[in-house]
Length: 195
Image 1 (tube, rainbow, N blue to C red):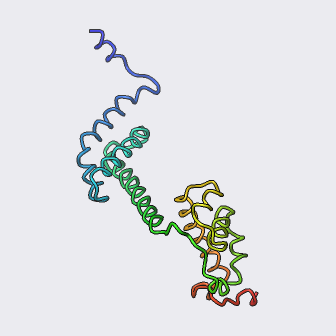
Image 2: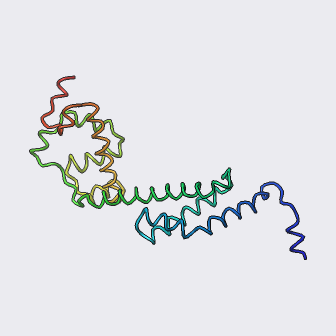
Image 3: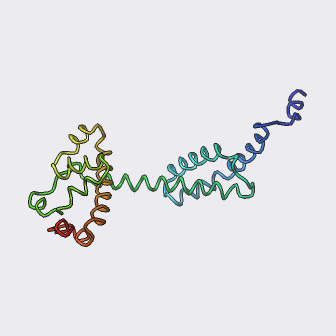
Protein backbone atom coordinates (compact mmCIF):
# COMPACT_ATOMS: atom_id res chain seq x y z
CA UNK A 1 0.00 0.00 0.00
CA UNK A 2 2.85 2.39 0.79
CA UNK A 3 4.34 1.76 -2.63
CA UNK A 4 1.09 2.80 -4.32
CA UNK A 5 1.00 5.97 -2.29
CA UNK A 6 4.49 6.84 -3.46
CA UNK A 7 3.57 6.14 -7.10
CA UNK A 8 0.53 8.36 -6.82
CA UNK A 9 2.57 11.39 -5.79
CA UNK A 10 3.17 13.54 -8.89
CA UNK A 11 6.83 14.19 -9.63
CA UNK A 12 7.91 17.81 -9.51
CA UNK A 13 10.79 19.84 -10.93
CA UNK A 14 13.77 18.02 -12.42
CA UNK A 15 12.29 14.62 -11.50
CA UNK A 16 9.09 15.15 -13.48
CA UNK A 17 10.68 13.71 -16.62
CA UNK A 18 12.14 10.56 -15.01
CA UNK A 19 9.26 8.28 -16.11
CA UNK A 20 9.47 9.67 -19.65
CA UNK A 21 13.23 9.16 -19.76
CA UNK A 22 12.85 5.61 -18.42
CA UNK A 23 10.22 4.88 -21.08
CA UNK A 24 12.52 6.17 -23.82
CA UNK A 25 15.44 4.08 -22.58
CA UNK A 26 13.19 1.00 -22.44
CA UNK A 27 12.14 1.66 -26.05
CA UNK A 28 15.78 1.74 -27.10
CA UNK A 29 16.61 -1.44 -25.18
CA UNK A 30 13.75 -3.33 -26.83
CA UNK A 31 15.43 -2.70 -30.20
CA UNK A 32 18.94 -3.55 -29.05
CA UNK A 33 19.33 -6.53 -31.43
CA UNK A 34 18.21 -4.43 -34.39
CA UNK A 35 20.67 -1.66 -33.47
CA UNK A 36 23.52 -4.14 -33.05
CA UNK A 37 22.77 -5.71 -36.46
CA UNK A 38 22.79 -2.23 -38.04
CA UNK A 39 26.24 -1.46 -36.64
CA UNK A 40 27.56 -4.96 -37.42
CA UNK A 41 26.63 -4.41 -41.11
CA UNK A 42 28.56 -1.14 -41.09
CA UNK A 43 31.66 -2.41 -39.26
CA UNK A 44 31.71 -6.12 -40.08
CA UNK A 45 32.60 -7.20 -36.54
CA UNK A 46 30.04 -8.42 -33.98
CA UNK A 47 32.18 -7.64 -30.92
CA UNK A 48 33.01 -4.14 -32.07
CA UNK A 49 29.35 -3.61 -32.98
CA UNK A 50 28.28 -4.54 -29.45
CA UNK A 51 30.83 -2.10 -28.02
CA UNK A 52 29.65 0.66 -30.36
CA UNK A 53 26.01 0.09 -29.39
CA UNK A 54 26.99 0.19 -25.72
CA UNK A 55 28.89 3.48 -26.22
CA UNK A 56 25.97 4.90 -28.20
CA UNK A 57 23.53 3.90 -25.45
CA UNK A 58 25.73 5.60 -22.87
CA UNK A 59 25.69 8.79 -24.98
CA UNK A 60 21.95 8.51 -25.59
CA UNK A 61 21.10 7.99 -21.94
CA UNK A 62 23.07 11.07 -20.94
CA UNK A 63 21.14 13.17 -23.49
CA UNK A 64 17.79 11.35 -23.61
CA UNK A 65 16.00 14.38 -22.20
CA UNK A 66 16.94 16.35 -25.32
CA UNK A 67 14.70 14.31 -27.63
CA UNK A 68 12.00 16.76 -28.66
CA UNK A 69 9.68 14.31 -30.41
CA UNK A 70 9.21 10.76 -29.11
CA UNK A 71 8.23 9.56 -32.57
CA UNK A 72 11.79 10.46 -33.71
CA UNK A 73 13.55 8.56 -30.90
CA UNK A 74 14.77 5.73 -33.15
CA UNK A 75 15.98 8.15 -35.83
CA UNK A 76 17.80 10.16 -33.16
CA UNK A 77 19.48 7.02 -31.84
CA UNK A 78 20.44 5.83 -35.33
CA UNK A 79 22.21 9.16 -35.81
CA UNK A 80 24.19 8.50 -32.63
CA UNK A 81 24.99 4.99 -33.90
CA UNK A 82 26.18 6.33 -37.26
CA UNK A 83 28.38 8.94 -35.61
CA UNK A 84 29.86 6.46 -33.15
CA UNK A 85 30.45 3.94 -35.98
CA UNK A 86 32.14 6.64 -38.08
CA UNK A 87 34.45 7.41 -35.15
CA UNK A 88 35.45 3.74 -34.98
CA UNK A 89 36.09 3.61 -38.73
CA UNK A 90 38.21 6.77 -38.53
CA UNK A 91 40.28 5.32 -35.68
CA UNK A 92 40.78 2.12 -37.69
CA UNK A 93 41.97 4.10 -40.72
CA UNK A 94 44.41 6.10 -38.60
CA UNK A 95 45.70 2.94 -36.95
CA UNK A 96 46.23 1.26 -40.34
CA UNK A 97 48.10 4.31 -41.63
CA UNK A 98 50.31 4.46 -38.55
CA UNK A 99 50.98 0.72 -38.66
CA UNK A 100 52.02 1.00 -42.31
CA UNK A 101 54.75 3.50 -41.45
CA UNK A 102 58.13 1.89 -40.90
CA UNK A 103 59.59 1.84 -37.40
CA UNK A 104 62.88 3.03 -38.83
CA UNK A 105 62.00 6.55 -39.87
CA UNK A 106 65.10 7.66 -41.73
CA UNK A 107 66.05 10.91 -43.36
CA UNK A 108 66.24 11.48 -47.09
CA UNK A 109 69.34 10.13 -48.81
CA UNK A 110 72.04 12.77 -49.27
CA UNK A 111 71.49 13.10 -53.04
CA UNK A 112 67.78 13.80 -52.48
CA UNK A 113 68.53 16.34 -49.76
CA UNK A 114 70.34 18.50 -52.30
CA UNK A 115 67.32 18.67 -54.58
CA UNK A 116 64.72 19.44 -51.94
CA UNK A 117 62.77 22.64 -52.40
CA UNK A 118 64.62 25.75 -51.30
CA UNK A 119 61.42 26.83 -49.53
CA UNK A 120 61.35 23.79 -47.26
CA UNK A 121 62.92 25.35 -44.17
CA UNK A 122 60.65 28.40 -44.39
CA UNK A 123 57.62 26.16 -44.87
CA UNK A 124 58.58 24.04 -41.87
CA UNK A 125 58.86 27.25 -39.87
CA UNK A 126 55.18 27.97 -40.59
CA UNK A 127 54.08 24.69 -38.99
CA UNK A 128 53.17 24.28 -35.32
CA UNK A 129 56.35 23.66 -33.31
CA UNK A 130 55.35 20.07 -32.45
CA UNK A 131 55.13 19.25 -36.19
CA UNK A 132 58.28 21.17 -37.11
CA UNK A 133 60.30 19.43 -34.39
CA UNK A 134 59.32 15.97 -35.65
CA UNK A 135 60.08 16.79 -39.30
CA UNK A 136 63.45 18.32 -38.44
CA UNK A 137 64.47 15.49 -36.11
CA UNK A 138 63.37 12.59 -38.30
CA UNK A 139 63.23 13.71 -41.92
CA UNK A 140 66.00 16.28 -42.02
CA UNK A 141 68.40 15.11 -39.29
CA UNK A 142 67.82 11.37 -39.75
CA UNK A 143 66.91 10.62 -36.15
CA UNK A 144 65.58 7.18 -35.27
CA UNK A 145 61.94 6.93 -34.21
CA UNK A 146 62.57 5.53 -30.72
CA UNK A 147 65.27 8.09 -29.90
CA UNK A 148 63.29 11.03 -31.27
CA UNK A 149 60.12 9.92 -29.46
CA UNK A 150 62.07 9.61 -26.21
CA UNK A 151 63.63 13.04 -26.64
CA UNK A 152 60.21 14.58 -27.35
CA UNK A 153 58.58 12.69 -24.47
CA UNK A 154 56.02 10.89 -26.66
CA UNK A 155 55.40 7.30 -27.73
CA UNK A 156 56.71 5.94 -31.02
CA UNK A 157 53.12 5.55 -32.24
CA UNK A 158 52.39 9.16 -31.35
CA UNK A 159 55.55 10.17 -33.23
CA UNK A 160 54.32 8.34 -36.33
CA UNK A 161 50.92 10.01 -36.16
CA UNK A 162 52.47 13.42 -35.55
CA UNK A 163 54.90 12.89 -38.45
CA UNK A 164 52.05 11.91 -40.77
CA UNK A 165 50.05 15.00 -39.80
CA UNK A 166 53.15 17.19 -40.04
CA UNK A 167 53.84 15.98 -43.56
CA UNK A 168 50.23 16.68 -44.58
CA UNK A 169 50.46 20.19 -43.12
CA UNK A 170 53.82 20.75 -44.82
CA UNK A 171 52.37 19.63 -48.14
CA UNK A 172 49.60 22.21 -47.78
CA UNK A 173 52.08 24.99 -46.98
CA UNK A 174 54.32 24.03 -49.91
CA UNK A 175 51.38 23.86 -52.32
CA UNK A 176 50.29 27.29 -51.18
CA UNK A 177 53.82 28.71 -51.38
CA UNK A 178 55.41 26.89 -54.30
CA UNK A 179 52.31 26.13 -56.36
CA UNK A 180 53.39 24.28 -59.54
CA UNK A 181 56.68 22.84 -58.34
CA UNK A 182 55.01 21.49 -55.19
CA UNK A 183 52.75 19.24 -57.26
CA UNK A 184 55.82 17.78 -58.99
CA UNK A 185 57.72 17.01 -55.82
CA UNK A 186 59.54 20.31 -55.23
CA UNK A 187 62.65 18.88 -56.85
CA UNK A 188 65.10 21.44 -58.20
CA UNK A 189 62.76 24.18 -57.03
CA UNK A 190 63.39 27.77 -58.06
CA UNK A 191 60.36 29.36 -56.42
CA UNK A 192 62.55 31.07 -53.81
CA UNK A 193 64.30 32.96 -56.60
CA UNK A 194 60.95 34.00 -58.14
CA UNK A 195 59.68 35.83 -55.07
